[in-house]
Image (cartoon, rainbow, N blue to C red; front, side):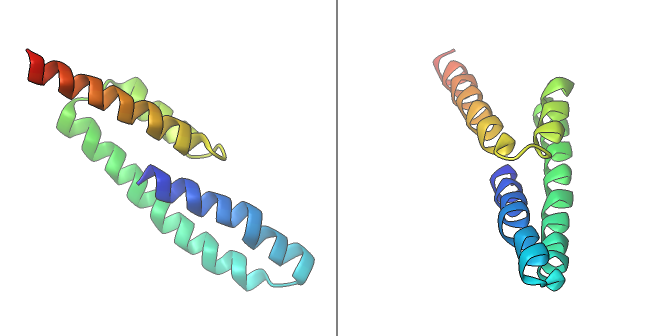
Length: 95
């Protein structure tokens, strides 16, 4: 979900906003902004579900929320979490 949120943020910032200001097409921001908003809400719900289900430390949830506002932040955080998850499950299997 983080990747989808990151992509929608980049589309909003790099495509929709320039179209609004340079091409006079504010409807693009309305459409892409609404889509990004829906994806963001879904992302926040997914963070809450993961927090409750696997008992993430609260710091991970806070970081996930903060990086959602930073372009490319979700991509970096997603890579880190994926690596941490692989190590966690590998340790569980080997235990």
